[in-house]
Length: 614
View (cartoon, helix red, strand yellow):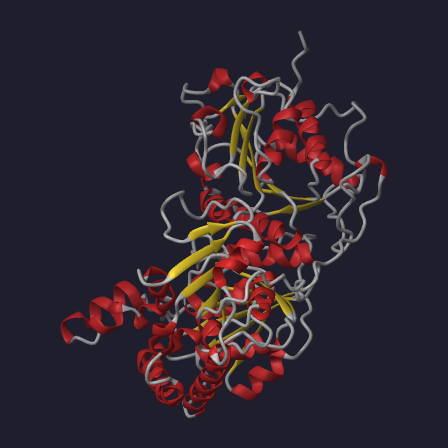
């Protein structure tokens, strides 16, 4: 029988498995029960094998790890102690589930003999994330966690787990799959999709290393590995290789042009939702089809990308016969209405499993082969693409004319400027900012920035932390555009302990003193009624008077108030160094009227271009 491991040795084994699985960044939230993991990770950092990022707030830690994974395309663990600390990770885990991100929750827990006894800081942690994780395991105190960690990292990458009863049944490991784990619950239609995992590691006292065991970190304990010293090759012995500078992920480039399998002409449009990738642009170009691309599709470039597309669908949409969907569209009700039309045939290109919808719950035909997709879409008939391009140009010009006459800075103007002036990495907050960019962000000939957004569940929480993680992982200047409520949802994301690595991150806050998006929804119309005005403003507008300059100063972040368009353009063209916060104050009371005037101007500009009989 294998001797039981003490907590420190178990933690060291877990860390070795993480390194062998490609982990190079770990986020740690401090705690006593997780101390063995913290010590083992500090030892690995002192050897130059990984970078530690310490955060005092578990929710911020979870989203920082999410951003690190998005920016590096590697699995990133977040380590917490027991109790409520684990529950604080749920929002990040939910986002990682629906967005397909390799977030690894490594939670410390009490040993079995203390569970259910009322012991301090002890709750039911196994299975706490339910169906949001691809794999969940509860490793008993004294057991070697190496194999469960290795299996968890494979599951995070979407590599199928061993089937129950096979030679590598995870039930036979020195761990017990928690309730809700795929292996325990039967077939999972999300099997094979990239996503988060949960490794719950029970640790028994003592929780500190023996001071004479020779395994402690060097004098560098507490001194983070310098930013830019990055990652080690996955292959080989990590202990024998120095931590080398990470290679920044390149901005999206043109994908190889796909083969066109048919000459049959169809009035098809290509919709590129979140995460579509550059292949969507190449497909649309090869098949002479209009491209309706969301900003975080990373396909919003090239000659086929159509501007102000969501405002064109009212007049051009009736002629659409088929829609090819790449990625996950989430931003536009007109696009959702197009995809729901019974007279329009739709196809979703899904070369790999995803977790953002359940099998049988969407009407699109699922296609995983490019040749089949080409046969479905056909090629655009003469004049089809040109009609959309001309309408997009005319509509964008009309919208710009209305916007130019609007006094002061607006979200639409800021969004277009941020889109135009950003290179490197761009993170877009949910609610209005990403939709402002979607409406008026011009499509460039070539992409300048790689765009990230938390569109898995489109929440406003954790955006500052996500952007921080992206910047730290990518080692590129990063800009995040977000609204004031989104910013105020994550002020803890500004916290950096003394000596922690500081990213090159510019935070652009569009401050309209509340929740501007509700002005554009049905609630905005209700709010025009006198007997509902005060209630709508309080419940949905959520007005506030937070001093963002004071908040930035408290966290040691440089602050600047931008008050006009020339100042905005000049500021956005300055190099991004360290952390800074730009505040742009706007008036949300004019939003509904402004959008209505833009829609009317676009409609009038496009009307002459629409054939009488489509």
